[in-house]
Amino acid sequence: MKDILKHGGVRAGIFMIIFYQIVMLTVFMSGYSAIPKNVTNLTVAIVNEDQRSGTEFVQKLQKQLPFTVVTNESLEQAKTGLEDRDIHMIIRIPGDFTEKLSEQGGKAQLQYLINESNPTTITSSMKNVAAEITAQMGAQVQAQSFEGVLSGMQVPAEQSKQIVESTMGKVSSDIVLSNPQPAGMQNQMAPMFITMALYVGAMIYAMQSIGGMKQLQAQMGKWKAFFAMRGTNLLVSVLAPLVGIGIYFMV
Image 1 (cartoon, rainbow, N blue to C red):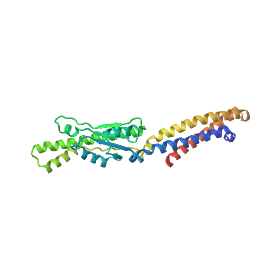
Image 2 (cartoon, rainbow, N blue to C red):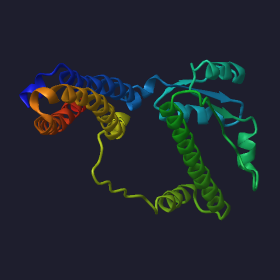
Image 3 (cartoon, rainbow, N blue to C red):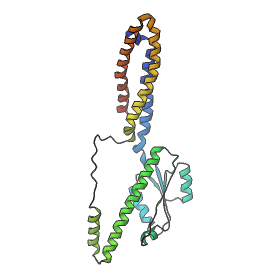
């Protein structure tokens, strides 16, 4: 086995299986760690065309959203920023938003503009935020509708508010997670990255080491070289993954 480990081709293969893990895991893990670490650097533009209650809604969104929020641009300016990837999502409040909310059977609609040519992590984050905003708005409108019904029944305002709050909070969720992951998308993607880096590194190592074994067959004998190669492979298969796991915890 010493002769196998001294061979230049085998050493080159061992170097590549370690080097490939260092390069791939360092690049991918550090790249994916940007979400949610740098989420505050993403920009969302809110275009308010509703002069009745849109301003109040914009103020609430500014407090809730964890992004850089721009509110002083027109729809055309915001669309230009979206195409240039300076803006990552546009939330448009139509001019008839309040009117549709107050109509019997009316359906108000918020418009979300997302550029899907952005990285997948940004696009999926924006879609999740859009769904959450819509769900919160729906719950808020439902609560206000309940308050209106109770007011029509001449229930005192304070009492109707308490009834609505208790009714809306009747159902809550209790999510129990096993094997919880640390925060950050890089931790969710780590199993795939480590497996991919090892797989490619192992292919390169196999090509190099087989060439080295064939060159040493005449010197060592066919079976001795074969078993020495198997022993080397076993040693590499135990030690090489430790390099990848070590890089993961370092990142």
